[in-house]
Image 1 (cartoon, rainbow, N blue to C red):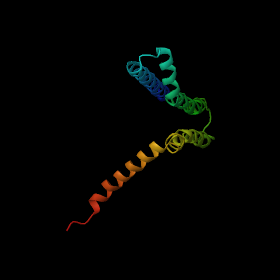
Image 2 (spheres, rainbow, N blue to C red; image 1 turned 60 degrees about the vertical axis):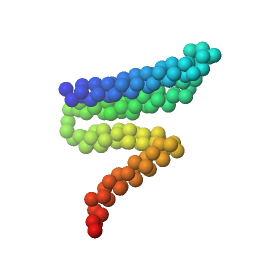
Image 3 (cartoon, one colour; image 1 turned 120 degrees about the horizontal axis):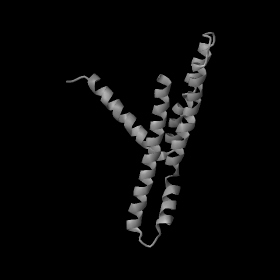
Length: 136
């Protein structure tokens, strides 16, 4: 039952991500067509796909990162002995490492995202320090 739930969550997240990416590309294409009427829909659509390719790639990467987790879930389901349970448990948690690395892959290389991340961290620092400041 839990395995089915995990698989459903992974698929739902993938479909939400890919559908929202496609909707974004289509909306951006229509917006661009209103501005530049001298271009065809096909040209603008290709340009938008080229410009937002990272969104589609990210959706596929999320599915690829979920595959080891699903494989380990099936392997642990088929286990007959409890002797190697720690090995499978360690493998299951290691399969989360690529997902956690997505921050380093997507946020840190981008100047804009890195700058926004720094601003967010500064805001949280200010919020956390506020209760500890002495009042005069």
